Length: 579
Image 1 (cartoon, rainbow, N blue to C red):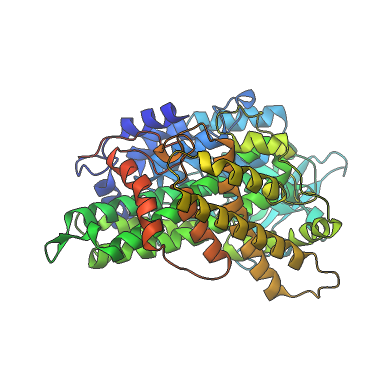
Image 2: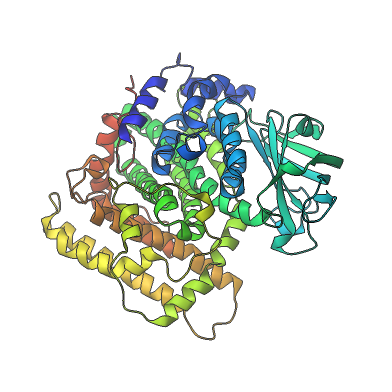
């Protein structure tokens, strides 16, 4: 995985070079002109367009964590490259989940040839209330085998809608309920006739169009139906688990740029004769931001691997990853902006890319499942977690699928989008495994190479705090007779996401003690306690910065990664050399 990421990033050159067409300066210029990132998309497109599609269907997927890392390498130079090359991921994932073998191979072949497939789900009048959508597809001919479908209604905010050669439309084919929708794949003239010519300009990822489509008795082929009638929303919900997980690559790419730009500034700027990077406040702010970034790295990578190994859990994990990454990335930008000061809001100069990346990052929060819809998805998982909490089963050791997810050098099974579920069963395996994992971690701490007695004590204490927090969460969820309370559920869902992230960090360390996580010596823990600290604080509504000891501990890990041109990731692949 690391070699593939390194080769791709190095092929794109030094992002700080003002003459590099794939660098920060080029990103800022495109943003100012609201220009499509054609050169970058042309360069990276052959790698990214089919990187999520299984080889059995003609794609180039090795594993979704590798794809996520490749996307991060490209998108750190301009997050707009993701929609420019990968907006088809939603439609194609639907086709991979429900389409025939011919439909799957044709869709992937279109991507390989440089075409894009739009996804038409949302309607302006209904937003995330998908069950209220009115765009309809009426079957003509026998109900068992229609001759064609007639489309009526409209769709809006279709990514690359003005450019797409095909369009997957989720339309109403029944009266009510989740089973009232089906998916149809339109191509060529069917798509062209429906374009409204009206697009919406976004505030971030500028140059990417979000267009509308209108259907007024549009007749489409019966063969356009993808999957079984009435399964359209179910198929879309499965596909969105893939999309939400991959969207985290944009957050991580944007915060990577924010961290690098702000530390470069702090290292070169003096305050009263002292480099800003030596000032306690700047060090604390940047280290706290970096700790949040590492937390997001763990959650995103393990969710990507979970798509392969634990597909039934991704209804929760993908939403958790989306929630954690969108929330922490906004705090990362706020803290990095404080390090940059006024330069964080300038549209010109060597740090102008910061503002562009910040606006691009903000876009991710509201596409590929917005925060309100995502919160509903997480809250919908709480009843089954409550039922599991009430059973009172003894904690179990991690199951093999969980070990496969968190052991980074283990091979993964093939991705089967159709195997993804709409809801998991039983407890979250990450939280369920925590007691056994915590015991293993505490027993192993004295052997960690960079862990002093005091640091071992702190990590053990953090681990116990995490255990108590998870036990408290499960107790609260499992209270018999607890009245329905949306605000309570909102708080508990948020806490669930952050505690899942913290437990994931412990699992990652436990399963990879022989690996050089974040460039540290095998078994190194200098990254772990700062990351647990920031996650536990935020699980209970606090946004505390790291204290001095944790700041220095985190900086001892992350600044060498920056100095050695490595990605801020547990696998730490080498990147293009910067000037």
